[in-house]
Image (cartoon, rainbow, N blue to C red):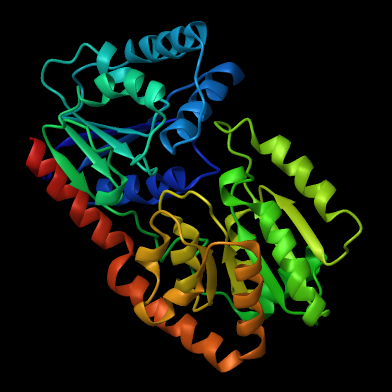
Length: 374
C-alpha cells in the first residue's frame, strides 16, 4: 500500500466522531508512506439542514424533503465534484452530506468508497429511495456493523468496520490528577461532589433532556451530586443550537447541572477522568466513540442500548445498557452505591477497548479495504 493516494471527504473539521477519527487516521497513514489528504464539502445553513434531515431519515425518522431542497443538495455536491480529479487512487466519502459527489465526479481511474457511520438498517422509505442509487454507484460501501445496512442495498463490495480511538490524542492521553482537578475548578465544578458526565453533540438522538431527568431521579437518593453536559456545536448540525436552548431551560435553577459547549480536547479529557461515571443515553447511535473513550479511562458507563454501543461493552456488564430514563437512573444509583463494582466495570471496559477499539486496528482494516478495491 505504500505510495497510494487516498482522499477522505466529509462535511466538518470538528465537532463529531468522524472528524475526530480522521484527525488521527490521516496523519498516521501519511507516516506509513500513504499520501493521505482530507477535504471538506462546504455549504450554507440550508444545505446542512437538508443533510441533517437525511441523517435523521436514514436512522428511520419520518421526514420527507421537498424537491427544491433535494435540488439544492445535488447542486452543492455537483459544485464540489468539480474540484475532484484523478489525482487520488481512492476517495473515501463519509456519511450522507457529500454522498452524491461520486455521481458528478469525472474520475476514470479512482476507486470510490462510501463510509456510512450511522445505523441505516430501517431508513425512511422516500429518503432511501432518493439516496440508494447514489450509494450503489460506489466501488465499496462500509458500515460500522452488519446490522446497520439496509436490507435491499445492492453493493458490489460490502464491508463492516467499526471506528476506533487514538490513545495518544490530547483527549485520551494520561493526565495527572492535579491537572484535571485544576481544570474542574476553572470550569466552576465542585471537587466535593461526584460528577456524572455526558459528552455528546446536542442532538435529540443523544437524549440529553433524558439525561437531566435521570439525574434528577438519582439526586432524590443522592443529593450531593453533579451533572456535566459537554457538547460540541458541529458546523454540519444546525439543530444543535435549538437543543442547547432546550437544555438550558430544563436545567434552569439547578446549580449542580453544568452545560458547556465546544470545550477543548484537554478539558474533555479532564472531565472524563474526573467523572465518577459516564452517561451516553443515545436513542439512536452510529458507534458512540465516547463510550470507548470512557472505558479507556477506566470509567463505568451507563448507555442507551443503541447502535454500536453494545459492541463496546464487556460481556459481564451488558446490564448497564438501558432503554428508559428510569432504568438509566437506577443503574447510575447502583454504581454510586457500589464503588467496587464501578471500579471493576471500568477495568473490564479498558480491557475491551484495548483489544478491539484502538487506532492501529482501524488502520489495519482500512488498508485491507484499500487493497480489496484497488
